[in-house]
Figure (cartoon, rainbow, N blue to C red):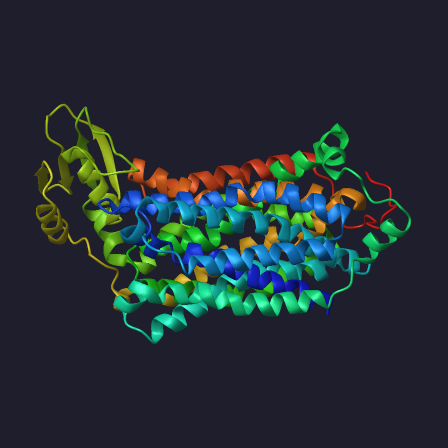
Length: 519
């Protein structure tokens, strides 16, 4: 009952949080200024990222409450905040109706969601781990690890179901609001379930003996001994786990949709299949970590993700849009940029050169930039086609002539191989994420556990991981290389492999009761 109640509530909370990311392509034209699709998408990704930026602050606020007043009451507060702010998104007026206030209100609600989620995970993980018998903490807490993926999967299922019963124009106009409003029902169920829970036995014993921390923030961060472990947990575990997670799920989805021009229904379906196949492995690797240790599994996940990310995404390109992949090999695009070419990620493009780069980026066309001296931008498509200046119709005709498809052709897709690649990416996610809740719980003493584990987790996931879509898409937009965005998650995974491999100890055999020796 403890696992089910904690996990189910967290599933609903992740559902709320990921609706925004899943519907990001709709928000880019509803809540932000129009005229530059690349800028609008980056703006919506930045707003999405803002919710991640405040997650550590939510961890500080709610972590403090969780260590002072208890685990149960704190994550009742977080789920209420999450549910109300998510339902409010479904009632927001658009940019066309109230102008820039639409974007501002969306940002405020995203910040509230981020604060709530910042307090949720640490509470659920701590609560379950403190109920788990010795030797089974990896197994018990791994069920919580499935909640992020299940919440993401639930959001895809709800959106797909609604899209299946209404036409595209109706969904774009108002149907997108329904999944957000549905969260009111999920909120009521979650609150009811959590009201039935009792407090963690570890916290109850600490409270009975008067050993509850009076200032968990000071104990967690003002003393170097504990702060050192917070920093090591961040750099050696949660940062790498965050980027591997978002690369394998969100960035893979955006890559299919934006870079490879796969229609959203097909992209969501393929991702959902991979999620369904991969999700049981959270429990598998959590259970395995009870036997062989948490650290070995997580470090292996970092290593595999770093070594194979680019080959796997190239495989996605080859199997999802073979015509595009062949065209890039046969007729590569080279852009001779003008000296004053300034690509603006945030607004309308001023020069023909910047307009050309923006056009290619929106179409998912990979290009190589070369410094030019001419007053007009020159675009070469393979050895035979050269364009000067910018005329959208001419560019479209030239790309069509060179064999660049406007959209991925479902008939040419190798869907089984796409699912295989997405599942491999999911397995990396389960390797780094399955054992990490037990690892973080065991790393810190009970009196400051909620605070100490929540902060590095949400810095790692919220900052390093949550900003991955924005950072990677910006790198792609600036460089023109559709694979260049992967260097960010690869670099962070390598950092965690080195720091974690050298400085973090194995934790699986540690005691976690309130008076256990901390080392």
